[in-house]
Length: 198
Image 1 (tube, one colour):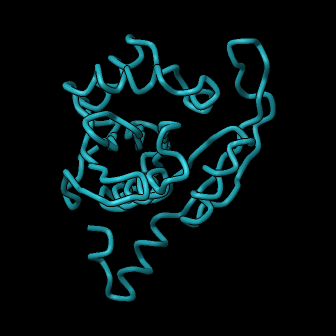
Image 2 (cartoon, rainbow, N blue to C red):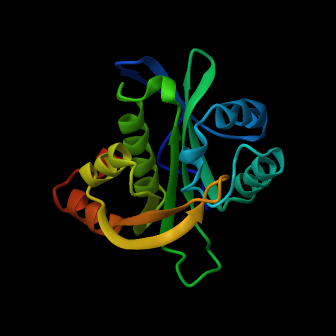
């Protein structure tokens, strides 16, 4: 994956939670992201394929970033990571045009516009790198996150019953939302607004 030919970082935004910087994640961020992940409620980690609060999982994540199959945007406030939006693609699969968004936000900044801003940024990044379709998955009780993505035009495509198991052995359903990004890009270009994704 080409990490952002059109989109530049860092970017600074103002939220109800204060000033937040968006920047691309790299090897130097590993310790800060690990600290962030370990501060998340375990339930928030369930919709991610792997437990990012484990150092070996985080190291593998960074290697995938370096390899180019993942691009991750960090939300940083007062020097600490408060959110992460990731786009995962597999260029060797039958679906090289599809990207999966994985996003987590610190409980400290929820309800303050950081999650919405990060989801918008991750979506714009997906547009800028040429993803044609996006999917996102989360547990069905994460109604706030579902509403954010529905606000971006995502629609439910699947319900996976008893798809993840928490540390106590309880199973949870996962909802998969999808969005035809290529259609959005075409509409922006038709209206003469290609700069909207830069």
